[in-house]
Structure formats: C-alpha cells, structure tokens
Image 1 (cartoon, rainbow, N blue to C red):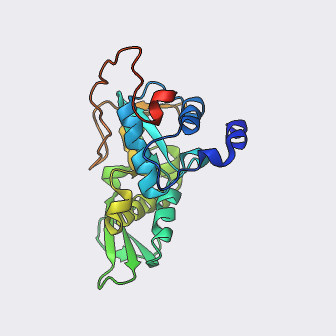
Image 2: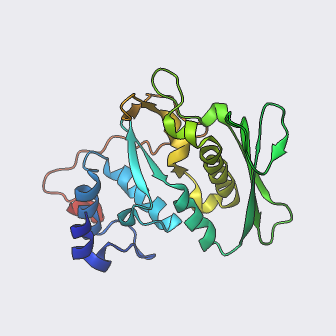
Length: 233
C-alpha cells in the first residue's frame, strides 16, 4: 500500500473539479482495497461521498465495507471530526452519561456500563446546541454467544461516547456526512467470534443505516468502453 501511494504521489489526490475516479485512483482502489467485486455504480457513489466529505480513502480516512453484497461507506470518529473542524463553526462540546436512574453526569465512574450517553455539540451561529443521545442497548457490540466484546467491556463509556458524538456531528452537518457512518456505529451489524474475527449478521443493521445498494450493471458490448474514469481499470 505504501509503495502505491508513494509512486502515485499527488495523482491520488481528489480534486474538487473531478467527476469520477481517475485511472490512477481507480487502479489504487483495486490494488489497495480489493474493491474489484463492487459494481461501478457503487464505486461512483463512493467517489461522491469522498469528494463531499473531503475524506481521503488513500489515507485510510474513509473506506467501503461490503455486507451481504451491499456496500456502506464508513469512517472512524476521527473522520467525522475532520469534517467538523473543516466547517470552521465548531465551538466546543460536552459529554454526559447516565444510568438507569436517568441522572446525567459528566464523568462515568461506575463499574457497570452506562445506560446512555449524551453528546452536546456547540456550533457558531446556532441559538441552541446540537444534542444526540446513544443508548447502550442499541449500540453495544456483542459476540455470537451474546456476551459483550472485550473493547466494550473495558471502555464502555468511551465507546458509547464515540457513537453519540458521531450522531451529533451528523445532525449538525448533514450535507457533509449524509450516508456516512462510523465504524463504532456499524459494529453492531457484525457477529464477533471468540477469536476476535467478525462476519456480517445478515440483514440486521444499526438504526438508520442506509447502504449504497446499486442496481445490476448493464451488459455493454465488448468493444464499447464504459463512460468515465471507472471504465479504464
């Protein structure tokens, strides 16, 4: 991967005036991320998401995940924070947790996981802050036997806070994050085995997930090239 990025240099940078992947970018997508089985329409939709959010797939800021032959663009919470900071209207935030008693606190010090996390995002020019609440029962990642994964056991408050933060950023900047979900939100859509490996749960997804589900590709004559940069790789 490093060799591909270094040899291509600035050729992999996505320009604002682009309408599709360039041949160099397309070849890098195939070699670096094994997206050869993704329909061209899906990868074109992926290009639009990358260009809109300003996230760079070649820097691992955003990636395309396949589940049951459907593809979803995902990023880490750091990717959402990049979108937030680039807006130039971010004005701070606060995080609160609560248990079954419904009492919110700015630090979770109990041994059991919180029932919910509330993330408050302040945006310049808005009269009221943007608030999002994530419930433990909706997002906790579990293994096949139903037990909680080690990461969510050890860092319960932190993991739930990342989900709440992503929800708040999406509410605050819908034009820049529409159709994009963080890895922490999508974890619930995977089955985690005892050895740490994962596989899709089938049709079960986290609340509100919208997959990039493309129609079948039309069959073009062999001598007719496909339109756009995608037809070159």
